[in-house]
Amino acid sequence: MIRILIVDDHAILRAGLRHLLSEYPDIVVGGEASNGHEALARVQEGDWNVMVLDMSMPGRSGIELIKQIKQLAPKLPILILSMHKEDVYAVRALKAGASGYLCKDNAEDQLVAALRKLASGGLYITPAVAEKLAADMLHGDHQDVPPHTRLSDREYQIFQLIAAGDSVTDIAQKLNLSVKTVSTHKTHVLEKMGCGNVAELIRYAIRHELLPGGGE
Image (cartoon, rainbow, N blue to C red; front, side):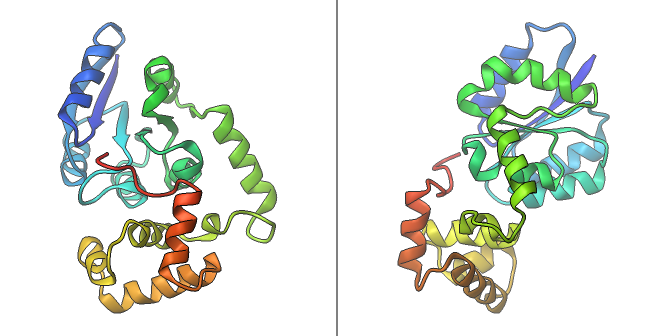
């Protein structure tokens, strides 16, 4: 029996996943969490075979949450279920410790196969993600790759918040960082992205469809 923990801030999506998976006798949804704090608590409470994790939730989420979960449960496979396209987060999520990545748009057709693959100790990635992983390995940090792929996980997180219109003070409060630290990251982001100001950064994010998913 594959025991699943679903982590998503939308109750309707959790209910939909429960309904979908109820048709498969080898899979049971054993628990749910609606945010990062609940997810970390549930990880410590139960013995899970796979976690299905939303990439973007209020509060603790994203790459940072994946890393924290893996610290608590290094062997727990994490399947990312996200509104973001694979080229936005998939490689970062896998490097942080996730074992699979699915877009919510096509998850229904692939979810069960992905859960079974992860539960058996494998990875589940789409051909598009496999291609990006291969390109990442071949190019490294020194070839002609998109500027946003050179950002660290924290820099990428701050880049998205800046592009979404948050001020340095807003970001500092959201991420529990000092304003000085966020300002330093902002400077590094602008330098690595080759942008002279925030307006250029926002235009880049829009052009490459890198803005955080609205309401996810």
